[in-house]
Image (cartoon, rainbow over the protein chains, first blue to last red):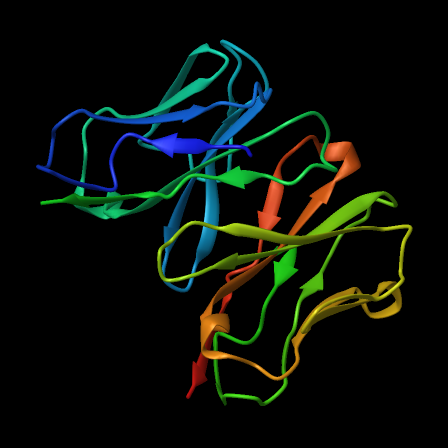
Length: 113
Length: 115
């Protein structure tokens, strides 16, 4: 079974802090994704990556950056956290083409005070 | 424009009732894929089904069934004889063969099954 893990289930940070959210998958998937989930807005794509060191902006990249130095790991970085980045962050991975389903991690609920 | 619309924000049903969750999509691609995911209270999205644009056959899996109609751009999900364990948020998603591996998710439908 595919396993996608995220470094924290809950995280509380202060405004202006640099925040790292880590995601690791164990099935050698090429594609990895970061979403944020907010009530009434569903899942919105922040960034995704097709390969190591590759990244593509999603629908809401502002205020975020990503890093993919190894195939299994995809990090989301909030350079200077703000209160409007309080949200649930979901990581996902998939293999190959758009045909294949994405597998999701358990999510990180980030609160920025 | 929203590529996937789930107009029902919240639905409540009494246990054993049937319930249909609606999903309407929009795409210009001829090759595309539709998905349903379940997000239980624990938070992790669970894949339920995939359909490709060339296969309009309805699918049944136990109490779950899916109705794909290209004529109305809909991919609706029916739960028969609902149970409390079906309480969750359900997401419909679209991916297009010509736009890479990006998924477009609807805003989700929160289903509550009342015992």
